Length: 447
Image 1: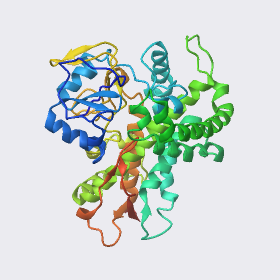
Image 2: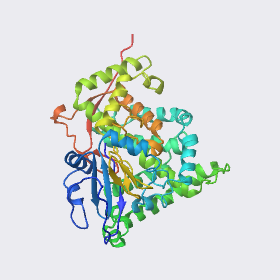
Image 3: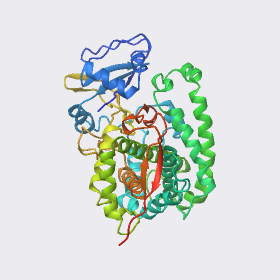
Image 4: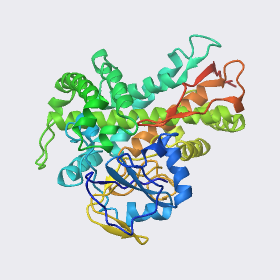
């Protein structure tokens, strides 16, 4: 569990806060940046927290962070003081991508966020809406049976890329409707992948938010603006045909404009689609790394679906062991180990340490719905991810299909214990190298 709390300061300021949490030594200007550059940031934070305690103070550029690394303290921030930490800080990269942060994820806490959240909870991502999209998920994921997985016997396939494409296809149809995907809808996908790659990680512009010079020399702002303009043009075309004609102002003080629609669409794709594919990718990696677990999971899946030869969501509800595999994957490989940062609206003292106003925090990821603070891959409190049910439905169904329809082998020369499990840090934590596996179609026996 890692929680960031961030406080921006000017270079000439002196922070007189004797009760700030302990932390590692700092360098002028850059603070503790050099201590995060020696490895993956989420792993380095864990190592530093082991040295300095579960409530740790860091300086990154012109910002202060407090890192929380225990479930008890996470409960304090995310539950006991949830309202105080319900807002978001200003991040230049998010401001560019999400139309001045007019989305759900990065917008500051207030009336606008409440209305946007209400619309998502009651209309876009409600349990009823998720259930109504069952056919879309089943149809798109069933395409595995006619994909390249079955066309090249005994050939290794890039499963990582296939999972990205499949998750994107499911999200596209869920977002825009229709009985099939269209080329003009799919045009947004490569742009979104470039945005994820460019904006992931600890960007200099976000830790020096007041410095125009840093934004200029880093080149990130210019790159994001170019990508944003490309995405905006594609989204305008999609909205004109798929979305704008459906949107009606129902008396809410914040009706959806095209800007809000585009910001929410970007939220759905950048958060939902990418995290689903990452989770299934890591689940398959762990199963290949543990053949006994793979055998047990496949046995359960095939016992349930051999009756019909087809995987559906009704049967997925019976897969107790598979759901345990997914839960363990969340524990070992949360898609976003550092959740979106939050900002303190007022100063507060927690466990004897001062958390100043405007301080920011972001937590990483047993119960994964935001109730057990040892394990919160979707966050907790007011800013918990609104797409939990949708994301879980995609993950469970996709993994069940992979395990039912195919047996899996590692490419020649690779043993389970030798499978590379290296990570790369970004907007989500993916495998450093794509997962290549050999699919062997499964043929059920009939009486």
